Length: 152
Image 1 (cartoon, helix red, strand yellow):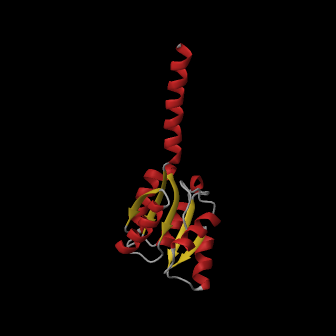
Image 2: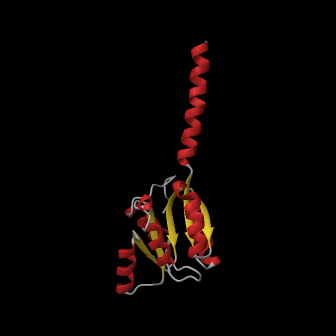
Image 3: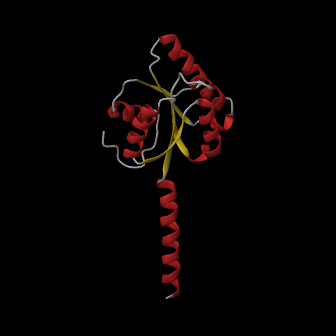
């Protein structure tokens, strides 16, 4: 009887751990409210919880506060206060964030600009406009773990 109570408590603790692991977060940084909503809708539909920021500086503050819980950051290039590329450079300047997944979601398609972003540490690009399928494919390409099966 005592063993049964112990197993139930152990199961409750394991269920709590599974719940914590299954909660996955994405940070969306874009100065366009419409784009934040589009990306947020897609990401929550995939099972992610999302944090949002309207520029790179605000995004950096959120990122530094919650970095250990964020699976992927989706960042626009052209924003006021701090650009997306400046955000990427700041994140990559810290060794503890070397493996964090950073995806640039942008209208910048010029090869020299793309090369600059890759050199700064972006893992992948999504060009605006995009579809959910394209976003999901790119997330999988860079190894982002999906909290639930992607229905793309």
